[in-house]
Length: 287
Length: 315
Image 1 (tube, each protein chain N blue to C red):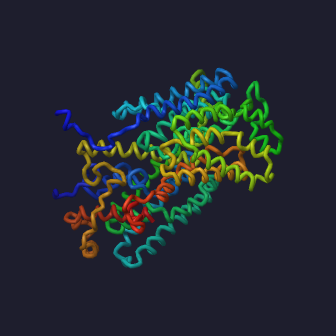
Image 2 (cartoon, rainbow over the protein chains, first blue to last red; image 1 turned 45 degrees about the vertical axis):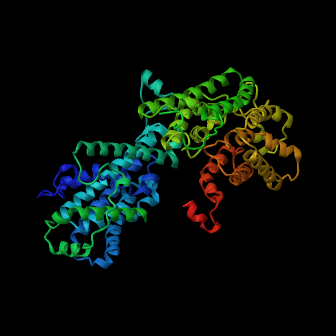
Image 3 (cartoon, rainbow over the protein chains, first blue to last red; image 1 turned 60 degrees about the vertical axis):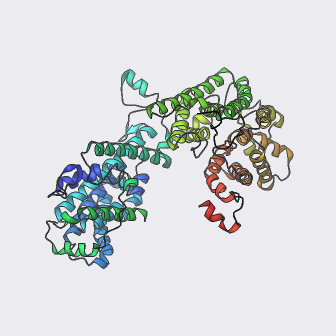
């Protein structure tokens, strides 16, 4: 292992940029970690819904990561989950009320899924496995990266479903009757018949599966090129490192608390730490 | 190596049946309803069927080319899927409907799960349900020049009287291959005599459906109503040609009866209590999904293994 631990994409670990890109590409919560499936499948009937859901989640994720990271030495280990919930729920309430006040139509469309951000396992997963163990700045960027990764994925899913299922993109009619494209091209596009299964639940699974397959392929290609061999051999939940957590987990944590924000201790236990992270996230997902 | 030492492991006595052979027989059997459909609905029906076949075969060919897999279009299973899909379309369908259905059936339902033998549901029915959900208006448009009324089943559901003789002969509206009970039964007899299918699944399916109709149909023992229910819609086609698909039906004999009864019950529930008039395709698809469970349940005890250790054998 080198002196400075390598993170995602060969960047130094736990720097803001590395965390940011890690969330969007390497550990994309939707396509690689397979977390937060409930909103992913439920609200992505159109691109606007996906985008706004993603941004709301990003807001909560980044700020709760930041606050939890700042409070990580104050929160006792035994009650950390309730403490995380309080922090996350406060931000969700904030988003809930703000959206109700300023974008009521969107609030109506997303319905119960806005308050349900509280139990989104991406947020819990990051709080538990990253923010509670790392400094404030990397945690903030980890939250931003994860949130934007989630936003990108569900916006793409929403866009594809909307385009195939209704012929629109961000509520603009592109395909099918009433297309805004003029001339012969428009006449051609106007012949399109929307495949309405794609705005139904089955379509969400079809699009999600395709997107995950694509991302797995990209990540595998990159791993083969040797650009990123930090964690994933080929991406996807099949390849999650199921190493048994090291016995000195507790000691590790204590050490962590004593340490400065620099996280130099991670140098030695870096790999085990990561394996643990993955395992915890997996469990979170199973729940 | 000398002739003497060239001994393979068992089985040493083989029947001549191969996938290609079986599929060929199924195609021959399906030709009867398909031919009647073309006769009944005109040449455009033939175009639809051929497009569906072309689409399924081409999809399988291109997928295997792209994935560098051995080419399996020679086993004719894609042709059977295409033919089944084709005769499951209304004769008014636009030309692109069989093409999209064929691509979906082969690519998503069959190839992505590993090809023939691995598909968890009948590809043709998967494609049909995909089309019905996606294009409900196009897939239920049975109004042609010859038949302007509702399909017999829809009329039956609405409480009207139907001409049972016409339904058995097949001169009614509906999807291309389902209308003629006579043609389907002739095709099925060919398959049964060739030993391709047996009566376990279709028999238990039709009988359990009939009992369900008598019990819950609301008309009691009414032969006209019962025979209209049996002859109408896709029941016969589904029972003989789709429910008996080797890949998606149980292999144990007891399992086949259970499977048939489940299909009969589901079809009855969909037809009598459901909002639509027809439910054969959904019933068979749901039945397909239950097949692994049924097989697990009815796995026979291996010779010499005591009863108690059955669970270990299964595991």
